[in-house]
Amino acid sequence: MRAVVQRVTQSKVTVDGKITGKIGAGLMVLLGVAPQDTSGDVDYMAEKILNLRIFQDEEGKMNKSLLDIDGELLVVSQFTLYGDCRKGRRPSFTNAAPPDHANKLYEEFIEKCKSMGVKNVQSGVFGAHMHVSIENDGPVTLLIDSEKQF
Image (cartoon, rainbow, N blue to C red; front, top):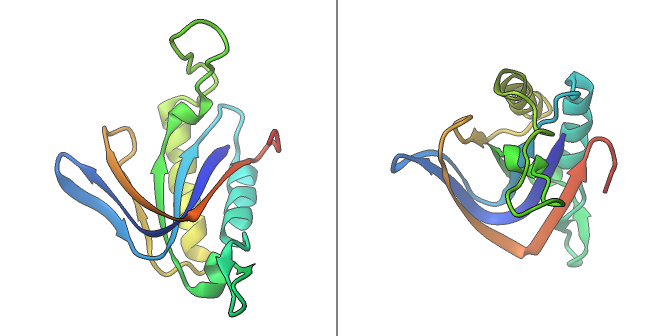
């Protein structure tokens, strides 16, 4: 499982001109799923992302997590995180999970984040063409991989 995690002041996702998810200060997570991913990967990613100390404390240091600041979370599925661009000019997406498996773990990730105490968890629409608006704060952008490849 892979994620692009961005600290945001606000973010939203729209499908067919309708807002499907909108948050204020918190994290915007683009989430990709691989065929071999399991619930264990979901647990690892939720624990890692929600506890990342990337929000400023009273001294201006990045010492607080999303849970510490009672921040909001927007999660958008993005199979293109498994795009392989090493050969040719057209990315290959064979490393991305099939839609049924990916959607199951995407939904499980959202529910896991809610159960861990994030009060406002919003999401995109799995498999839809989406427009994502991100107001990155910092900017702070991190890449996380449950196989710890980076």
